[in-house]
Amino acid sequence: MDKKIYDHLVIGSGVAGLFFAINIAKSGESVLLVTKRSLWDSNSFNAQGGIASVLNSSIDTYQSHIDDTLNAGAGICHLDAVKLCVENGPRLVNELINLGVDFTHNENGLHLGKEGGHSQRRVAHAGDITGNELIKTLVEAVKKYKNIEILEDRIAVDLITSHCKQSKGKYAMGAYILDKKTGIVNRYVAKNTILATGGTGKVYLYTSNPDVATGDGLAMAYRSGADVANMEFIQFHPTSLYHPQAKSFLISEALRGEGGVLKLKSGKTFMENYHKMKSLAPRDIVAQAIDAEMKKSGDDCVYLDMTHLSKEFLMDRFPNIYEKALSFGIDMAITSIPVVPAAHYTCGGVVVDKNGETSIKHLFAIGEVAFTGLHGANRLASNSLLEGLVYGEMAAKKAVNYFDDYQEFDDTRHWETGNATTSEEAVLVSHAWDEIRRFMWNYVGIVRSNKRLRRAKNRITMVQNEINQYYWKYFITSDLVELRNIATVAELIIDSAISRKESRGFHVMVDYPNKNDNSFKRDTYIRRPII
Image (cartoon, rainbow, N blue to C red; front, side):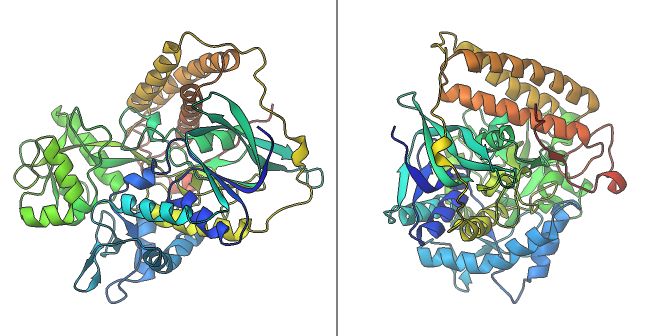
């Protein structure tokens, strides 16, 4: 491929990446948008709940939204990030409406949902397929710009970086990207590189995330020397559908917001034993409660009861969830929904400033891949799409005309395969993939212990060595790239969890059952050692 220099390389096509591309394209600068599958395949597309924002000033305030976020975050949210997102929310929701997003309305205007951890109704939604509607609108907007080039079925392998001779700092210059159809790795050079690669749910055996959520951007940034933080805080969604054929299907928190009640197999409620908000408690509390009750009873799941609500209401408010459950023989109007927790959201990520820029100049991270400080130890429901919009816009404001004379693009190297050969043992990749996801679920899941974490550390060290040998010996494939990335992310989660000797938010340790504000009311930072 002949080298072409873009102004901006965006890797990922969730709400953050698409919103950045739209905002930056207005300036006329060139954008290359690269996505691993199609533009539609992202965590954002699968979002059911909505966007949390103060949209009814007669019942809600910025301070109330801020307080709810801080309470959910268990004491380590960054107040400046929380204020930035909350105060920009209403304007950005209105901007989405102007773009054509068809949010659900009632006779009073926007219909606002209520979810766990929220003290008020403030979640703008499009039925129960908000992500679908949002991504559809943003994709349509992106395709209208001639200065946005789109490449699908490409997976980023590693970042291209160099050192600035003046400041002695590192800066990004694009990425090496694998064409999944041809198997060829090309270099894509850019003045600014934007990671919008989403989350890491596929590190775990059970997850609500789509198959693309393998932590690619986070792993690449870490390997390049960027700071990461708070990787011990993996949010487990309390309620994914428990059914052998229901792969990664989420039962939205909005169901509990509309009156859904969690019950045991016996029909007995239990959340009143764990939190004053009962079934509407923050996600970390609910997930831990369900996990504890399942261990007590030996049952495979608990149940979400919606049967006290009318069939008409359920079909109108949750049409997609109703039909999906019905396809598995569950009529939520007459029978409770079997649910279990599943890995859902990465509260930590690549450390960024208020503009979404990382510790590597000209490298931005936005959306779930980033650590902004908004979520603390536990994300408040429906704050994630809000964060993607806010930092997508902030990053675009910083990135426009953000170029330096010292970026020596002629120095970037072609991808070199060396003596690599074609592997005839792909089973090694699939086995390692399965092993990581299983021991992460068993040892680094909802409840952890020193013993389990030490065992996980031993296993990830051995598997990492095996992967590295395989990686440098054979031609790379998409599966191998993803395996390498989930192994890197798993190691970051394990190391972060080992270092936090307390229980806070979604990091629950049986050896340290209480919060320790004296020593651990802070973030956990990791930077790759320089060898």
